Image (cartoon, rainbow, N blue to C red; front, side, top):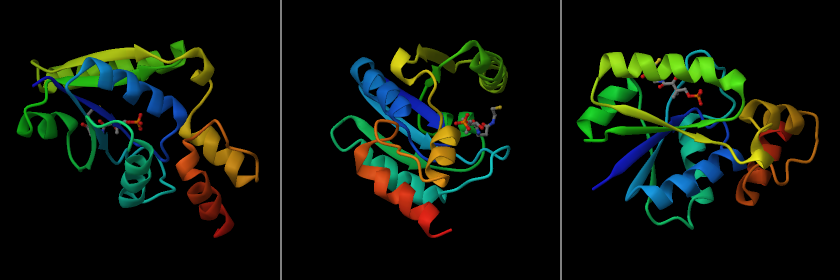
Length: 160
Ligand code: PNS
């Protein structure tokens, strides 16, 4: 079976992420969305909350599942016999960071490949951080994140 992993922080999942997941799911037999802690980023949602939000957003895609784990991505992949990492690329500004990560993963586990998918233009400006900023100031996040999770994000900020 041809399995790919789409790893990220997903704090929270955006429509840009969802678009990559939907497209990857048409190419691979199975796609695992891997929710990981990025030590360089301060989280808004707990890992468990992020997983639940993603699960609601991907209900319509049967060959996608969500897993969270800590440690190295390549270790999880090797333990689960996954050989391909999917990453989305928006602008040139993403490139350096993603290039470095893919080379590090290759160094750690040479038989693993990273495949990059270009964002659809309508999502090229979108990021979890910008969604959080808009929501924090009470702006409208419709069309930026899946409809099913809008209320959860707004509630998170109302509680703050
Ligand atoms: O959505 P993000 O924050 O850009 O995703 C980054 C992520 C979580 C994929 C990356 O930080 C990661 O792979 N973390 C797990 C630890 C690891 O394997 N690091 C080695 C690659 S530099």
